[in-house]
Amino acid sequence: MIEFGSIINGKQVKSGEWIDIYNPFTKKQVGRVSSIDTKTLDKVLTDTKNTKMTLTRYQRYDILNKIANALEERVDEVSKMITDETGLCLKDTRYEASRVSDVLRFSAMKALDDDSQVFPCDVSKNGKPRRIYTTRVPLGLISCITPFNHPMNQVVHKIAPAIATNNTVVLKPSEKTPLSAYYFAQLALDCGLPPNMLNVINGADVQATAEMMTIHPEITMVSFTGGSKVGKIIASKAGYKKLVLELGGSSALLILEDADIDEAVEVTMSGTFKNSAQRCTAIRRILVHESIADTYAAKLATRVKALKYGDPYNAENDMGTVITEESAMEMEARVQNAIDNGAVLLAGHKRDGALYAPTVLDHVQNAHEVVAKETFGPVAPIIRFTTLDEAIDIANDTPYGLSGGVVSNHWPSIQRVITELDTGTVNVNEAPSYRLEWTPFGGVKDSGLGYKEGVIETMKGYTYVKTYSLPWDIA
Image 1: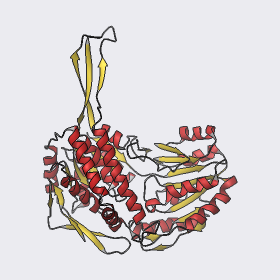
Image 2: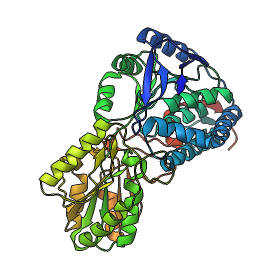
Image 3: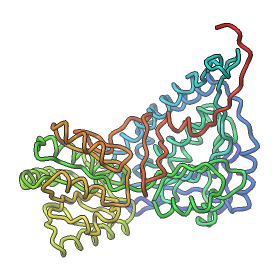
Image 4: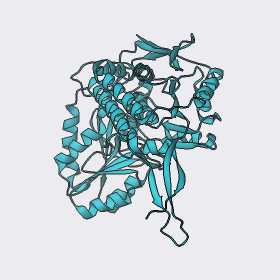
């Protein structure tokens, strides 16, 4: 069993109060982390704010690469730990470990970049023989709150850019899957990260802890990834702070009349069932032109029935559990409600504890709860359409606006989808979830405020631009 104390000022602090972590498949305890009270958190936030980082660009680059090297030497250990706390299959958790390494190395690369600009001032009749320069300055204390899915990658997406920009962070990971965050923080310290640059805590009183991580006056910025409901609460309470909110999604994949059906099935498989479909960008609605829907649905059902799911520690399995039995029961109920209201079951819809079979539903309506709400699990609902206008209207008929995709080779139609989908991302002949770790990522509407994450955008967000000017009398 893995045990971590709170990471405070470079040390593990064990308070005597513990949060126990259980594997969703075996239901056995796999670890525990120490918790702190709000009085201690108040001091941690203040002390972290008062710690100023002075690492050179090379030092930041070096530390980030050392962490990446150390993680790559421990892939099996990291993968098993993530499986322990999430119930995700080893195929998925090994992939997550690989993504974490990308985030670290991209952040290291960008830490070396010259992010300044120069503006000549003799370009106007009102100008002077001067030049204006810019430099980027770290914001200070960043409060980071992360969810249970991708428990290490979500964390590192917030932490690595903070290290790269000389910011300090207090992190509160999900109480369901905190082990990865503490493991990463301790490894970072072992690789030379200065004390107080990253502190990791969880609170015995979850609600009070989250509120203090939002409203504390020493916090300059709140970076939150999680549900839209909680994100709106944070936005209402944070006050005069910079906010990045990466929230829920209901990604639509539009499969148009000219689509290659086999390609469409492949895109669907890669975009729906990885990570037990517990990704904010996972395909939640499959919009298929009625002329090809029968063939597509049959081929998709055949592929889904062939997926191996079950024991997440079996390296041959393609899918493990969802995060809790309660979550599996909720999606089971939503699927059954859709069936009761006209949807047709083609595969799956079997539950055993937190294990829910990969499921395909046809003839779903956009009003069915299984798609009207964010069903965070392995369900592939097919919605049929007759015209592109109808498909775009259906795709946009959701409070979410994170990502979407289209399978087609008809350029005018592709252009329309890119232009008219109310989402932060549109991928062509690719799953809505596809990206690299340094490319811009983020949503609109209830999926976020429109700010982007990804290494490059996060590093911009974690800094402000300071300008200064100097005399310059040479043209």
